[in-house]
Image 1: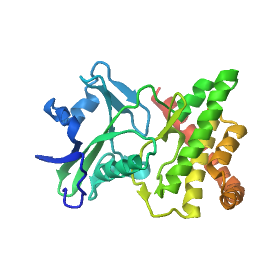
Image 2: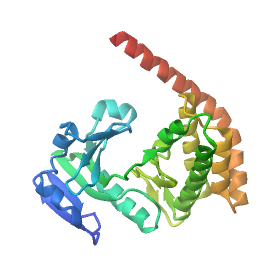
Image 3: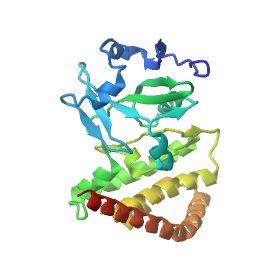
Length: 293
């Protein structure tokens, strides 16, 4: 399992039965407490366990050293999700994300600290995957941050929101300048703690020597689509918020500014189809709930 996984100086590779574990050396005590049984941890409903939103809820487990770990179990999305759920074939999703996250951290891009990746063989080439990271204390995702700020923020909250949005523009700018592409750049994958911002969830993301302009724009349009979808559900996101992000992200790059503006003109037509899909999806959800009541 570990043949194609590069050796990381601060991590150990451990094989335990059907479990392949890549773990940070200074967190090996997690295994001594039986925490490699991740299914039991995820569903045990332990005291002091918190759950974070995502495609699925991610449990946050309290450790004896006072820190908390967040366990991410990998699931397919869309049609594959209804068929395969948490089963994968070939590959090593958790290991790849951990290694990429370490590269991102080495570029001094704020993110969480991964401490363990687990590959659980099920049958032949099928496996389940998990990633364990340290929780960022007191951080909330951007969706919840904007919701808490509200539609009519106090002068103090308005200043905070503006600083945070500008910081996010600078964060994603640096992320792209270092050659990283985010496969799922959305508001829930941006965390806010005070005035600090963090980027998370790099499953299937990648790094190149240099991102093309099209790749950068693709990421920005994905983020805008996320903002528009959440705006429809009541999250207070203004045009000024989006423009402030745009100015921070494109600062000093006139060509990129022009390219994004041109892409946004085309995006307006695509957005109508996305919006129709979101509305239909909400109707289906409400109808499904009505049927089950």
